[in-house]
Amino acid sequence: MSTNVLFDAPGPRARLRNNALTLLSAAVLLFIAYLVISTLGEKGQLDADKWEPFLRGDTWTGFILPGLVGTLQAAVVAAVLAVVFGVLFGLGRLSDHRVIRVVCGGVVEFFRAIPLLILIFFVQAGPATLSGYTMSVPAFWAVVIGLTLYNGSVLAEIVRAGILAVPKGQSEAAYAIGLRKSQVMRLVLVPQATTAMMPAIVSQMVVLLKDTALGWIIAYEDLLNAGLKQFAVNYGNLIPSAIVLALIYVLINLALGALAHWLERRSRRSRTSAAGPVAAPPAVGAGGATATL
Amino acid sequence: MDTSALFDFSPLVQELDKILLGFWATIRLTLTSAVIALVLGTILVAMRVAPTPVLRWAGAAYVNVVRNTPLTLVLILCALGLSDTMQLTFSGDPTTNYFWWAVAGLAAYTATFVCEALRSGINTVSMGQAEAARAIGLTFTQTLRLVVLPQAFRTVISPLGSILIALAKNTTIVIVASYLDAAAQMKQMFDDYGGTIPIFLGFAFGYMVLTLPTGFLFGWLAKRMAVAR
Image (cartoon, rainbow over all chains, first blue to last red; front, side, top):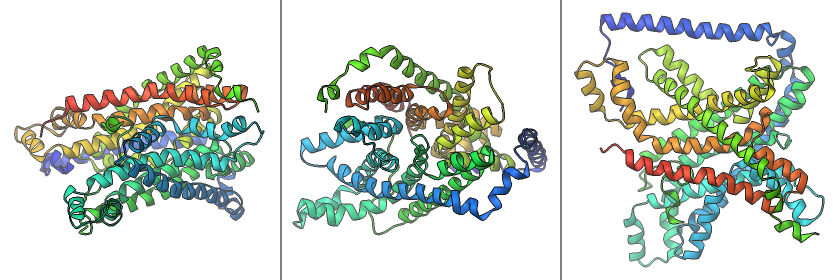
């Protein structure tokens, strides 16, 4: 249902009322904006010396861009590993062998049910205790491994949904012309499922990129750390820095979101795949996703 | 290397009272933020489908900005920014103050997901419903309140369950807002006893006790409440 059916095309009176409402809501919003800005001003957060550092090149080359590189490095490495993990375990859950199915299902459900942060803590502190040596896992790898296991598990569900979204007749026809199981998967199901699950995968990348910010907690040198801990402490401008950093994250994620949206529209009218785009999976157990366990 | 420590579950027993307190903090944070996020999300979705362009624009801007900001940053902004730097406090008692700032951050972030879920729910209500509502002379607010939103809510029970589970897991991040929950307790135990598998599994089990039944409950509710179309 398109939302414009919720109200009629306005007549003269409704137009008047709408205009009044528009004015009123604009006034309320402006008042809220005024409150925010005046409070920021009172607390000295709008002073020029708090914002001026963002106009200087060395702020960007010294803090923000290296931080952004750190964030993107972690995100890209984790994304690649998560896709590999997702494909392996997604296909594993569809295996004909009960043991593989159950093991893969257990792993996927476990990592989806626990918070990413305690996983990252464990990846960082666990190996030292387990090996008996006082080595700690670098923050980069703690973040990347945590992100891989969590997002890989979500991607595994997306892969499974993508394969299941290919109409059954496709694999039946493939078997009928004498293809083997691996060939059916490789030549018929996976290519069509890929088109179907691309939008969901890209959407998951937004989640992955945002979660790299957890690196702050274990002191990984990402955008948040470089911009808020190292830089903002020097200038005492935490709030302006937080606003600028938030805008950088928002811009990157909006771009990724737009890509996902474009891919979804494209795959809806795609003739190369018999499967429609699949949605992101529900959280643990919420949609009967654990039924195969 | 001392292998006995690797399979030693005794720290979990020794610190059981602290662990339970940690999970109690998690539950309180989750439920409080969930209620506020649900209310805020409903207001946001009403704004996003309103006949007033300014409200639609404001709702969309809020959702797009907050949803795409990392929760860690939102919570840092609340606790270190608004509370510590700007001295906007809920209470003189630091524990109470940080609790409410953590709730504020979690609710502000989660509300955007509630809003998007409800909006997709509204999109599943068939056109005829709204047309019928208009035909019997209901106004925009009445249509939304009596016809569209009740059906939308029933359609999105399962996504709302997902959001609640994500919220429960996200409460771990309040560690940056100086409020201590179960994850902070685990970190403390890692520092005291070392990062052993039993401690990790104990906490993982605790979170699964919270998330898995919630998932099944919402799955069951979603089937029970489904609108026949």
